[in-house]
Length: 419
Image 1 (spheres, rainbow, N blue to C red):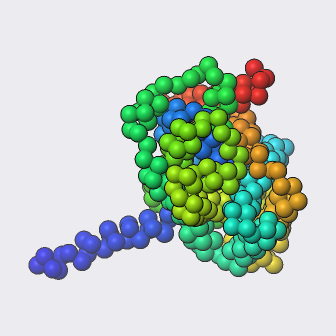
Image 2 (cartoon, rainbow, N blue to C red):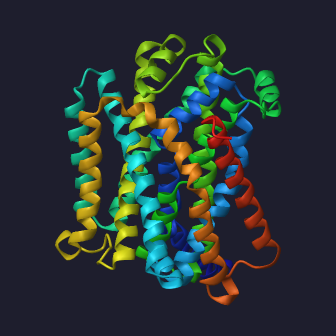
Image 3 (cartoon, rainbow, N blue to C red):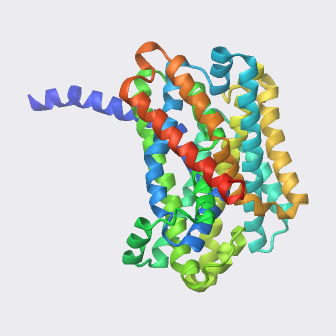
């Protein structure tokens, strides 16, 4: 009798698992992209200059990051619209273009840091900048121009998983747990350099192109209300993973370079790798950091470029979907291709762009009022009534977003000597 009952009972569970696995992807991809080259260098610089003082912030940002990206999931599933399209429908063409302009600025900064990281890895192995950037650009074009959304998603996840290399880096650094704990609870709030790096870390976590990408990816993947729970788990897992990677980089640099040379300035991937080689060995240090940075840079370049292609298309009204062939959506694929080629070309001819890494993250923090303002407004006014932000959770989201934005903006302006 049990044998006859078991199969029907097992079927719903198997169906739920299959559905969850099919839904997983947008959240994980966007979170792997969140730990991009600029974020890695920002986390490394935080560990070098301030030891473990900024480690607690990495953990506090996990629920904040989830809170923000869950709204994009909710908007994408229950409206079926991308972020730019929904802003246009809800607030008009002007505000849609304002949001797209902010997205374009953030995407440009992101692509400069990603390709700078790729070039830096190539130079570690004696590969000319033009060669490494050409290969990277060709690979990024091939992934998107020859595939469907599902194939692009799988390729992005496969590349992004190289970021797991940073966990080995943190383990190999052998951090002292006592120092780590004391550093987390001791916060130098009055130090303007600390506030500047704090703002950079906030900007390294909440980026405009992440919001555009995940909402558009959810809509493009045609996720429905029954997928909402699984999509939230996808986002939660990604939020935890990306912040653990950031924490791993910070711990590794604090335990090694920060302990020996706290005044070191690590503005490039090459400098970070070379600084770690005495502690990890020449071959291991180069290889581990190279894999991690390539994974971070390439997946972020895909996500940021697609976010801009989707965002501009949603505002301008051209056809946009990875399920369409390039000739069926010329503008969509054209914007993506221009982003990739222009980013690679600019880094090839302007070699000192890597110094912008931390600055780009601070710029993201300064864009938070615009980015989070639109996101919360959409969640309050544009969702179906039963799915809108309301009650205590609405005020929690508004309060947390306001405090995060205020800290990011104040820290950025303070570090620049403007307040």
